[in-house]
Length: 157
Image (cartoon, rainbow, N blue to C red; front, side, top):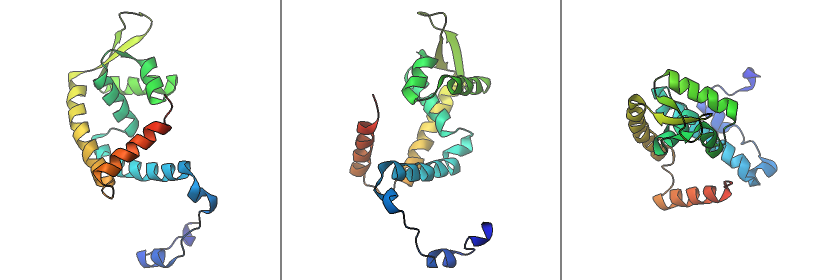
C-alpha cells in the first residue's frame, strides 16, 4: 500500500534493509537490479532523444552492419520476429532506417540507416558513452572491461 511507504529521506534511511535471502547469491537477481538502474539512468539521459535502449541496439547494429537482414538482426539481439518488425516499422516511419529488398533473397529485407539515422547514431553513441560512464563511475576502466568480458562469457553464441 502507498501509505506504508516512508515519506522522507530520513524515514527511508531509518528503515531496516529488506533481507534478500538466497536472492543475494543469484547472478540473475543482481543483473536484473543493475538493468533496472541502468535503464532508469538511460531514460533520464539518452532517452531524452526519444530512443529506447532496444532502439539504440537496433540502430547501432544496422549502422555497423549495413545490409543486415531483419532476421539476422533479431537473432543477434535476441528479439523475436514480430517485435523486430514493429521496431523496424517505427524506425522506418521516423525516417531513420531504410528497408530494401535483399539482393541474395528477394523475400527478405536488407536494412540500412538513412542519412538522418546515421546522423542520429553519431549523437547516440556519444550520449550512450556518457550515460554509461556516469552510471558506472564506481568502476575503474579495468573493472568495466572485466565486467563486459564476464558478461560476454555468459552470453550464448
